[in-house]
Length: 268
Length: 201
Image (cartoon, chains in turn yellow, green):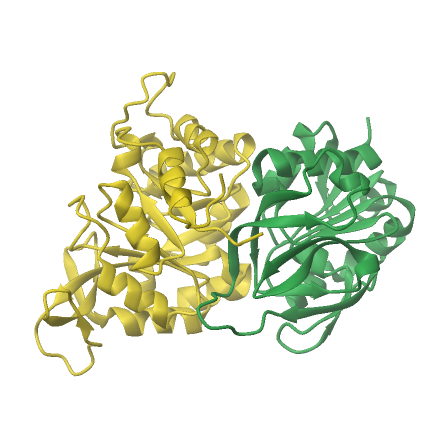
């Protein structure tokens, strides 16, 4: 009996539809997030993340309806992120049937949202999502992280999808989020995101070793081995991926079989 | 049809619990009304969040829950389970419903072990004859999210789980049951446990 490592597919949603294409030809409606999540569930996904990239506030109702439908049809943990700015937003999403909310840019603008969210709804449902980028400039406040090529840098928190640097040191931000009551950290490195070259191991490991709360590694998965590295080298508690699953390069079951054969505890 | 009251004290994701019970064949009502709780054939006490806040929120309907507990089957889930205990150490010492003996304790710090305990872990049946686990294997994976655990005696323990230390992942006293994990988020196994609970109602 053992606590298992988690594999989490992430679905990017716009106006209630899955944005990235999928290769599941057998799906009735490949754009329907609930149907796709159901497919992942059947493959053994440990949780599902819905990331809402809908721009307009008027369309927020769509995601709420979607969460309700997902909660009604799927009996697995659901995290929802994107555009969450207030306690009210958090409550609406949780009431609709989500288990956790992930907060990114809003937490940087208003760190008290983490504190207030954790106090009102419990630590377990507040996930701090942080996007980070390497910064080689000297900064006395930046925690140095050593890279495999011998150089060192500090990691800076970036917002608005990586377009805006904040000057905030990622490792300090992780500590602060934990102190404020975040229950988990979803870490995405802009260095590796979309590259399919594997997770950004140095920062994943540094945050995992610093934080007393679970860390989800995200950004860069291209092969089965990358998941293995995320857990072993990166010391992550969970690995998140999107495109490799959406485009059917491999299934969640493939990932878990690969990990199990290499003695990483997973739920099969 | 049997009627289950899901006690709504403002905390927690009640929708999945409700749907899970419906899927298991029950009629469930989400309610904070004492008369509905007292008239129900079974009670589910769900909840996530902090212990003291949970007890405070429960305040006005606490008596109804206690009154029903002796008469009909009751299932506490996660924080709802912890509230069945005598007391909790979460943010100071606070009194629970005292339906099951023991104290709720925080996981001790251990190197490399994250708190909260979050994710899928196995439950091992210590009392396989229990109706709550009818048809379940001696070891099943279920979904946990918690930083505190119930410390109770073997006579009140139905399943154990190990994370940092071994703890009671489901507890019992008479017709009162509690599960630390979330059956409504634990796929087919979780639905089976909910169905077994309905079967006792």
